[in-house]
Image (cartoon, rainbow, N blue to C red):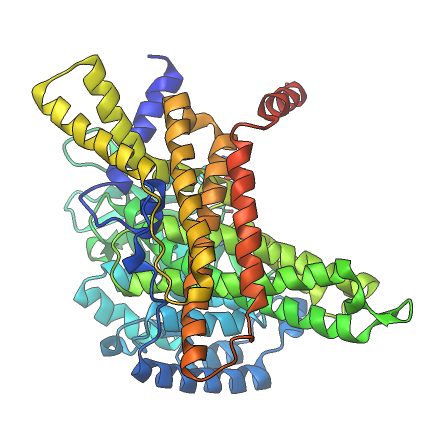
Length: 589
Ligand SMILES: Cc1cc2nc3c(=O)[nH]c(=O)nc-3n(C[C@H](O)[C@H](O)[C@H](O)COP(=O)(O)OP(=O)(O)OC[C@H]3O[C@@H](n4cnc5c(N)ncnc54)[C@H](O)[C@@H]3O)c2cc1C
């Protein structure tokens, strides 16, 4: 085997161990790749239970009052700092421990309710929403999910009030997108009582203001010469903790403290290990699933702000003796923003509800949510900016800050390119394994193999002949539901064809992956929109609303999303990939 092949096999084995250990119920997104519409996860549209909705409404009212009075996004950006008064206030409202168990002082909110809170903050200030995410969605998440009772008792009560702040430290110079390549290492002491950590971390939000950091470091695997990543709780008062740069000057989300630090022979007690030793990468990926969900919520909030600002301006600014909203090219932007904001909210709510309802494996949905909402927000900001013309360029409007703040979203917590590839490959793994079973049996027939290959073949064939049923309750949405079912069928057919045509080299064909992931994301987004629209239509009918009161934005989203899906699928056979790669290769040399 060549060096590249050895590396490939290593990566495949690592991914298999990390992502696919143990049997799990078929989730919605994985079902799409197999040609199924797993309706139980997505229909009817999830609702927050009445008792929690009352609690959430109270919290949101309190939060809005506090933010109206104390949050000044302009000053936060200008001073490159979130004042302690704001952090304390967020703590008082409960934001900094929203999903932590009540027993440790948290609010015990579901992820769905938490997302509503983050949407509110995201609609106002990029810095504050990233700060809250860094502390609550990822900083203290590993402790909540994997901490022992004792660890939680020790750390959580002060973290959930904001008296102490948390951070999540994975990224290093050599471990950016390639998160598994962590170089910081942790050597066990001779008596086994502690680990000695050495290495550097960079780009860590809250690093300089956190009292507790979840740090990923490489530990030896006992009985072998291998190493694996382990999660540790580290505090900056530990001797050898050196803050190299507390606040790296930066373009956007300037209020957050993004830092660089070194650990030099830092002794960390073994009691500070979070989760099983050697399973830190799994811990990190699980934590990031939560971060990506609240990312979606913050982007939804920001997109709604774009829509509000753009609408206000389009209704007041006159040129050519008309308000801007009269021009079709402005209407196009406003309508798309409204459609996308509706979809972003639906997708966030649905993804959060999957976590709340105990779906074990939601990594595809959270990755889709993150890519979809960050890309849609970027477009919404660009459109709102364009509608404002020259005025958007000046500092008295929030749009130039929103552009700067939003740019990190497509890079942080897994760049959108890496996640796009991840969505396609993880999604295709299910049908891919079934094809492998069939190929392997054709090459080396055995009695057991033939049985498995037969089952796999029947699965593939079953999905190929059946158009999945999309069970909406509202008669007026049946046509959309039928179209969605047919597109899922076509998508499954395209996935099968790509797997048969390319086999293992598909692992490198990112242009093919991008189309498959793009179609899958839009299928998921359309499903969330249809489910939400169905619930709203039913509610409207029960309350005697006129059938004429259509939700045009939601319907527009479905039309545009279906059109994009058809485009992605058509692009699998009609594209310029060869010319594109040749041009890039020539330039890259
Ligand atoms: C403001 C800010 C706050 C952050 N906060 C935190 C934090 O709190 N904790 C933490 O651990 N990290 C944090 N990060 C780090 C962040 O998660 C990384 O920047 C991100 O994972 C990308 O890594 P990188 O910057 O090294 O880019 P690289 O890995 O060098 O990637 C650069 C670009 O290359 C492309 N690329 C890379 N790999 C592939 C691939 N396989 N296929 C196709 N294209 C690819 C992508 O376009 C990517 O954007 C933060 C970063 C910033 C800027």
